[in-house]
Amino acid sequence: MPPPMPSRPTPVPHAPPAPRASTPADVRGHLGEVVVTGGAGFLGSHLVEQLLREGHWVHVLDDLSSGSFENLAVVRDHPRLRLTIGSAADPAIAQRVCNSASAVFHLAGMVGVQRLAAEPLVVMQGNLRCTEVMLEAAAAARLPILIASSSEVYGQGPVPFRECDPVRPGSTQNLRGGYACAKAMGEWLALAHNHQQGLPVTIARLFNVVGPRQNGAYGMVLPRFLQQARTGQPITVFGDGSQTRCFGGVREIARALAQLLATPAARGQCVNVGSDREITVLQLAEIVRAALGSRSPIVLVPHDRVFPKSFVDPHRRVPSLDRLRELIGWVPEQRIESIVEELAAAEPSPSVQRALAARAFS
Ligand SMILES: NC(=O)c1ccc[n+]([C@@H]2O[C@H](COP(=O)([O-])OP(=O)(O)OC[C@H]3O[C@@H](n4cnc5c(N)ncnc54)[C@H](O)[C@@H]3O)[C@@H](O)[C@H]2O)c1
Image (cartoon, rainbow, N blue to C red; front, side, top):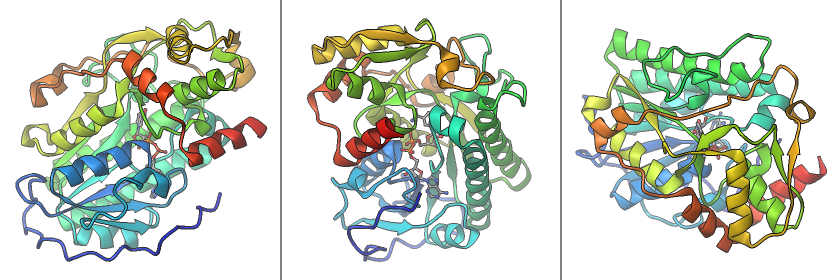
């Protein structure tokens, strides 16, 4: 899908960033320019706001394949923000953005189970390739880098998931495992850079993140439920609804990522990031219906009517947050009920509305 036309020329002119230290700089101690790949996406745009609030120069690298300028509307004219539209999988672009930076948050990636079901090759190759390239660019520039991995790596393992647990992408016949494998391979590459070259890498294993600007077009459950309830359609729950997830609020997750990269003890570590409050997907549907005062019926749809038979849905997904707590004193505060109430009170952005409408007709 071609990226939408930018509504303003890029890169945005900006004053030169502070000179880069010759040794890896601490993202907080040294307010140099911080690269955020995927910074025009859902989580990335909240991280960009957080970093700007903290006083950093921020350089967003995004190909706008699923992200959008609208996500950066609040900060788009900020004098410490610049944008490069391009792929994090392009070694020349990746190196160029890293050469003027002091640290990297690598969030660019392709998400969503529906996208994975429709375009497994694009999703697997896209995720793996851009992580490989960004790690090489960060290593060449000797920059601390945090990469966004996923709770998908745990597959169907016993909960709560601990960082030292084996990854379980499952059989190669199960295509869903390909995304998990790409993320796990990114982790291994990052840790190999750390081991072999001393690169300061931090791996954030993200659990379900929700909040404003999340795009439901690729199968994210909460935006889909909200859209269905808003428009009076049945709220469709895949399977029997007893599968569980833990939903973390995007603003506090963005804060946690910023803190993690600034924490030397987190380097060379893989860290679960999210909420550990477990609810069933059926409960989530009920929370949405209550928040919107909707009369939409909740309808159970057999899993294999929506996804290929080989697509295994993990039944429970709960993190152990011990490591995150030890590193940054993490206590998740945003409850899913209040996040849903906030989202219910707000209209989805025009780009999210367009994406959801396109999905409804595809
Ligand atoms: N949101 C979640 O619940 C969740 C859970 C687990 C992991 N993650 C990870 O967090 C990261 C951000 O996810 P998100 O939910 O914000 O998704 P998103 O789709 O909103 O953001 C991803 C961003 O990356 C950009 N992008 C994709 N490929 C690119 C490339 N090659 N070069 C440059 N930009 C590219 C997209 O345009 C988009 O702006 C991803 O790596 C994802 O795997 C998210």
